[in-house]
Length: 172
Image (cartoon, rainbow, N blue to C red; front, side, top):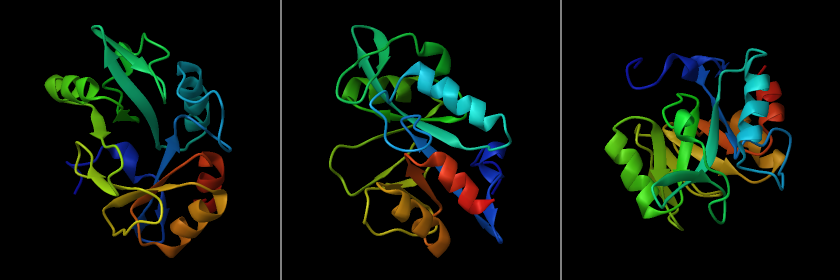
């Protein structure tokens, strides 16, 4: 079991069950207009230093020979040094980003548009809100209530949420 996941994946257990908490676009305590910035990532790292080993999902574009972050469009470059960081799960927003990440051969990423489910490069099932889940699924939670109830009901492997801090506290 240990070879497929990095050591940092095994920090949050609810009873005997692994729970993965992923910060959606670097958000910590709710949705933010400043998502997907390098600053959000550093802010996330500050929380991580308090003992929470989790992941951060960031949107990734590849255009004109450069990597960019940004939700609806490329907004900030200079992310090359973070591409292989074990704590980032990259949501490739265009085909070129997905292709470039696959050529690198490492890093954790996925690509989808409106699919209810997709597979990450490390074999996790990624699910839209309110879709079918199982013990190998990360589900995107759109509210604090759905984040907490998903953690408590134990059907999914983890959550991707804007309410990262509250999710960590719910497990502690």
